[in-house]
Image (cartoon, rainbow, N blue to C red; front, side, top):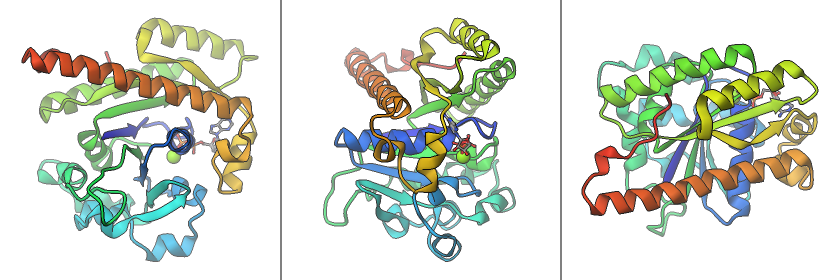
Length: 286
Ligand code: ADP
Ligand code: MG
């Protein structure tokens, strides 16, 4: 089971949009998907059609972090076809007061997700194929919980001069988290989002990011388009709302690149593990 955190401490870079549409694309490919909304702004939960009432009174990812309830207790089944959701809650905004980052609290989500009961129905032992985590726009006890629970990390970024600095900061956090917690989180990659090819400064920034991060940047860039907001208003994925749009196709392509990397990585890991050198396999963000 892959657990992919979609993370960038900057807001508005397309984390939520990317999480939702990768979920939809994985479902199109026949995967069973669980989406965890960890952002107290609840954007993914609203975009998937939950009401304010559901969110204020129903179960949420805050119950996973604060009460260590199981996924089976808190998820909504088929919020979108084939995609289960654990919504966020405003309570997540107070996580800094409720969880101690210098204690075992930092591994709470990891414990919940490694529970063998993370199954997509109550009467089977099959796990989800992929768990997607939509992270908040910060680096907090919540984000580090997500990092420690994840097998993979996806960083959406809007190409700009400043985004290169932001990527370096994320790299530092990931490196610290990996070494402090003896964690083997792999980097799935950087996804360029909200790309407007008519803006030369964006083209320049994109080239700079690709030069600096090489193959860690996915080939597929997501274009800036109004269709994305229109789909969200209708509580649909882009793939359902405008299945033939360029942006929907780009999200399918991005998802294909991610799953191909996973397949390559799994093959590599299996090969290395049989030669008992698994420590040498990692794909850090540097
Ligand atoms: P984040 O989760 O990083 O804060 P969102 O995915 O919520 O970012 O996107 C922020 C806003 O930008 C939303 O209103 C969303 O509809 C819009 N948006 C995201 N991606 C695109 C895109 N490729 N083109 C146009 N608008 C986009
Ligand atoms: Mg968001």
